[in-house]
Image (cartoon, rainbow, N blue to C red):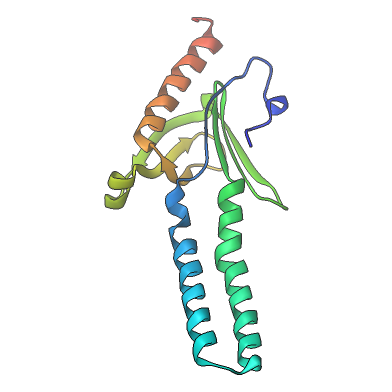
Length: 165
């Protein structure tokens, strides 16, 4: 599901639209597999229906809290970079968003951990002149490319604002 075009400013175009890197789903996937294995082991070695019911209730709580919620957070998180601003959105029931005009961006830095070099992800830190200050965005795929593209967008936005298209 892409960012709605009707929420863009007149003349604004989407340059990049991202979700967090799929690496953010490693821990929920590990927990899912672990709950399945423990559930099967308990079911095989226990014939007591009360134990099965307790196991099922505990497994359900763990799956909802540690698997479903992180997955839904991942699905509903968007990083959108347009010709005029950076848009961060997340949330399914309660939406949370932040827009940073490119004209207010002072600098962009990235950090790539060792595993990020292998899986091609990292974190962006966007320094802003807004009163909220810097924004830290974790799990950005192709983080170095995104950083370069933000600088291109900033230059194009500056040229548009000063009339030097």
